[in-house]
Image (cartoon, rainbow, N blue to C red; front, top):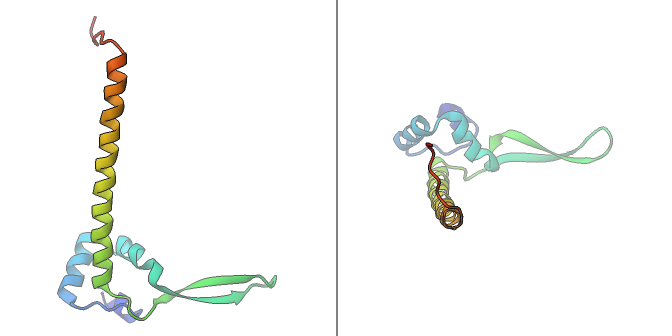
Length: 106
């Protein structure tokens, strides 16, 4: 948490931030934080415009907001999985209705 706080992330309330870190893991947590990193434009040696992602985070980046994103991601994943399951069952019913069952053992 100290490392994230030093880079500009609001880690308050700290006990909730530590619980999130323990349950999510540092690398997964920073993956959710990635869109909030500072960036700067520069020109490379060929004169092309480039963007460099920095180690610091934009003002307003907070662990509380990342928790909301993680919760949303979890809920979305469950909804997608439920939809895929329904499609799978419907396809199985269509295929199962057209192919006669002959059994596995002979």
